[in-house]
Length: 175
Image (cartoon, rainbow, N blue to C red; front, side):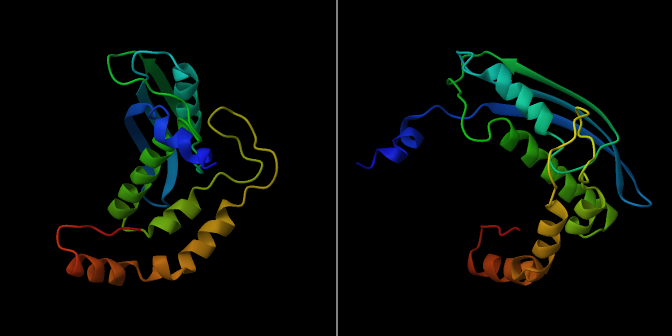
């Protein structure tokens, strides 16, 4: 009776995404100004929710941030690749990871703490997302980031990285 994990062993893979993002940011105050995103998701040989995955990827591209201006395009492709399906968080995982990596790169370029950059650019409760909708309920990302900023995994990340990488040549540690 251990069938509850069978779906993960035999299910379809996630859609592969190719994403090209351009973020504009005010260098003086670290505030995001706009995002242009073009993404394609490859559904393989079947249209198994591919249109929905592409749509969700574009709508989730902003992650937790406020972009005053945006231009997001997403296309679902059919190809000879393995069939892709829908799984928990489909589309969001692909586009949000790319957004978060962009935020880390921007923080490095601006010499800002990555959490500080995120805090400056959070979509506030009552704020409009990239589709012009307002989320129901309170958005608590500020509270989560404030707590994360004080956690030892974050505060000790440089020391832990150096220690781990010295003990594991050829491997990388990141937070």
